[in-house]
Picture 1 (tube, rainbow, N blue to C red):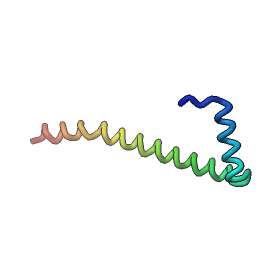
Picture 2: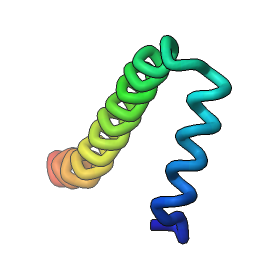
Picture 3: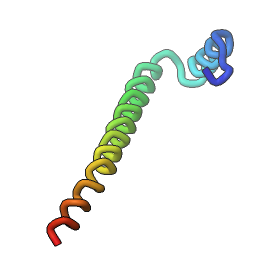
Length: 64
């Protein structure tokens, strides 16, 4: 996973804990989860829109 092993992940988590404190971690996790969910939704919507566009153009061209 990007060349990051378990020791590196533990060090990163400890640094985050020191910077933000234990009280803020649930809020940060919640915010990150919402951001990731929003990003996935936007990507899915974009893919659906991209897939629908050629079909609509074909229908419009066939009506002319």
